Image (cartoon, rainbow, N blue to C red; front, side, top):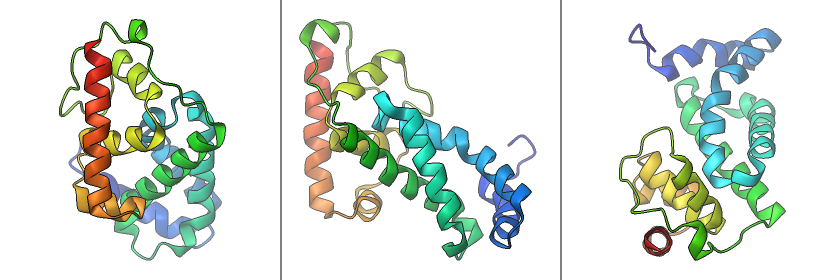
Length: 177
């Protein structure tokens, strides 16, 4: 935000109002987080981003009353979104291996890509298995550490590390073809 207000500080009053039943605050809150939810869902469920976003926003709507700390809203939304995007991606089972000719123009995974992914990166991520997409997005786009990722995904930290290693290896191999 331009005025120096952190996103979670701006969301906190809306969270409190929505939790107390204010429908307009809930609407404003969902509009506020939709771009964030979309940014997270797109690389995890690229073929079904709209469904993943809808499911995530619905889960936020349904579960908001259970959120105890309004300052934790964005972290909670991230957890909900990742869970729902993985569920949608698995449900649709559209994972296909990358064809060499489709990824020949790719060079290397860009560390610190930031919020927007290039078309080439999105294309390659879409062809990776959902668990590989998820750990790459959480680590290299969201900047989470292995411990936080393990907690978010409900798996062991060692599993996160091995998935991340395999995901990066698969990504690099496909990118350099």
